[in-house]
Length: 203
Image (cartoon, rainbow, N blue to C red; front, side, top):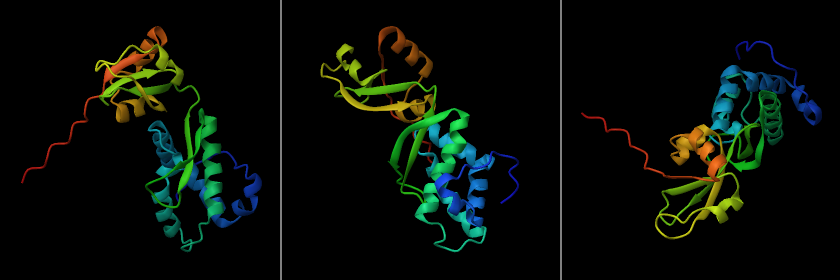
């Protein structure tokens, strides 16, 4: 792996034996590589575990670095999770949820999801018409929501943090206005439009 510059020493703790192997040293450098830090923070902003963004690339680069197939163990995967924690927390991230299932990628089956320490958490409610959405700052706020446009009732969907995830996954057009509405009125209501499909290639 190419030189990544200076970074903090890894506090290996219970992973000391694994860290002191050539692979352990290599893994710490891998996790700290600037490109991989960007991948981890991007995955986090999209509401996915940071490790999910590294799995496929890690599998390829382990092979390129000359490590034998099967050399990467479950213990190594746990150590990488601990390394990710030590990289992200000083940058203002905190644990959002542990043991999040990873459905794509290699080497990891579940991992920890992080969020910005100052992130605003939106709670999502949907009407009978699934595209009618109400956002609040708490799950209990369902009691204060006005009736949905279709005359039914609101059903709790899920919670998420991060403006990027709101735009990409929930069709939130203006996250700033949504936060202001929630602070002022207790909720923000909108209609989630269908995502536009890319035009087909001709010829």
